[in-house]
Length: 87
Image (cartoon, rainbow, N blue to C red):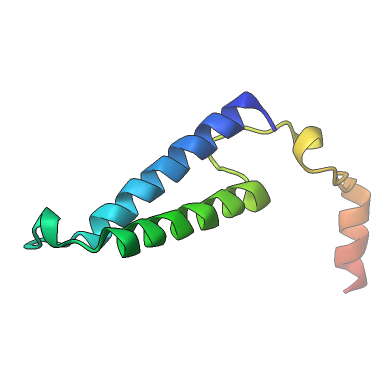
């Protein structure tokens, strides 16, 4: 995993954390009336979820080298045609 991946993951996790806090803090609610413990727990749990998703699924904004990220060989054209013809 490259430096670009970790930078993009950090940015995505930070945005998720802040978006969750803003989502819990609804319009018309005073900042002094917010249950900060519940808000921070919700923000933390969604951030952990997004971090795991980034590790497992990757990030569309980061370009990967085909062989470095997924080690699946490309099928040859003849193999694909044979599979289609067999069906």
